[in-house]
Image (cartoon, rainbow, N blue to C red; front, side, top):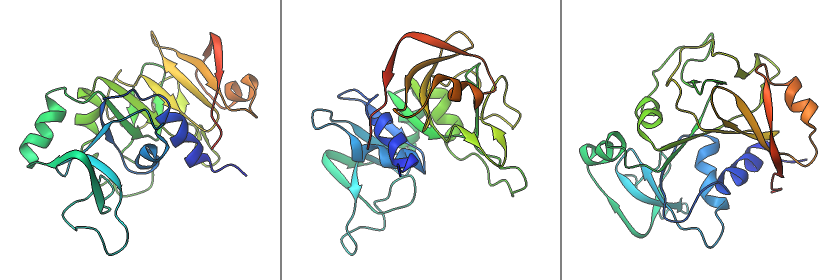
Length: 219
């Protein structure tokens, strides 16, 4: 059986371009660099002050002060460096990130995203997601397409408190890749074992079909 989180991560990695400076949220986004093609070299920024996060450090070989967005000990790629918080957030708020990849609870057809308040659970705040989503040149959301518990996650309008308004460019799920264009979802790629009808059934908002639909990559 396919691991949906790894499947989403691999297909998100395929959307990145050589030379990008990116930031990764916790959860699925952290897995994305593991699937980068050999000819794609990016720099991963972490709010803690790391520019050039590599793979997770091997047990016993890490540095507790060198961590990624999930708080896990990481490594530095060649050319990577550590900076203070002021410079780290200056890179974010100054619009220097090419792409940020975030998880979400809901995304709507207007490009709004809700990713910080889970119904019925104590809200701990949205962290750096607001700065990242507002200031990055491109926002990619990785998420499960539909929740058996809470229903639709790709909506006409978000029902949870939003993190950003009109900033999401692309949504990658275990079913499909959708672009947000002019307040609508556009289906551009689909999982090998999924039909367009299934994607439509699990999406509240209307979906426009791109002239050419790609096939998502298997893990």
